[in-house]
Image (tube, rainbow, N blue to C red; front, side, top):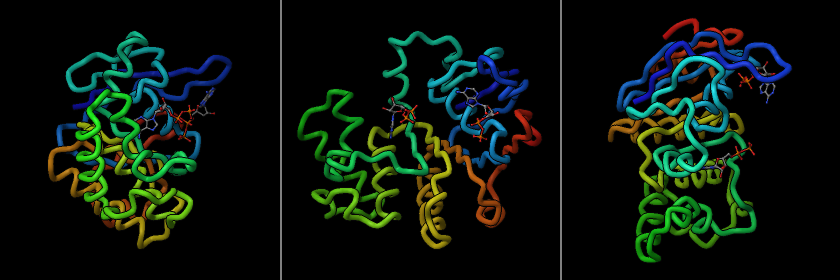
Length: 218
Ligand code: ADP
Ligand code: ADP
């Protein structure tokens, strides 16, 4: 599903953010990405999300080489990705429905199809009935579930989550991880950047550890 071959990334006027990184994730695999602040976790996720390009090496996503992908192809390829952020990145002046519908509106689906898919996504995160609420009227855990519904509404093959439980207490974090495990069981591949060592140890999935841009275990 995802393969890094000798991937290095250097930002202009900065040191190496990633150095000769090699790993692969199979279809339906769930892995944690760990490392101190500045180790290169966000950079690695940004290469997959096509927000940055690597300086050397090759990134393969679902059989396609996305290393030097043209800007015009990026929106199309991003439809296969679900992105989840620590700070949710919801539009606070839009309803829950509109937030979740956003990726579908961009893809040009019919009104009916959008309604059906948004409700299906909200159902998966146990938020059916909250469609008309605004994000700020919800708890932090509920806001993150809206973010997760938005990430899965296009039925992506790969979910990338950057510190998804960073603002949640242990109980809500466990709930979010349980949701990820359910997606994994239907064949979705999931890569989660996190500092939460306790959570990682408890769940026992694969761990990719970055140390100053070097992948230490894979
Ligand atoms: P992490 O997510 O593990 O905290 P990052 O990928 O954000 O690590 O950062 C890795 C390294 O790259 C750090 O040294 C950081 O300062 C540097 N870096 C990240 N983004 C940029 C950028 N846009 N320009 C220059 N340096 C950057
Ligand atoms: P930046 O922090 O660099 O401004 P963001 O992290 O806000 O960028 O978002 C980067 C890109 O990801 C944007 O093009 C945004 O539209 C897109 N994006 C944000 N959330 C999602 C999502 N859930 N699914 C797909 N794409 C998303």
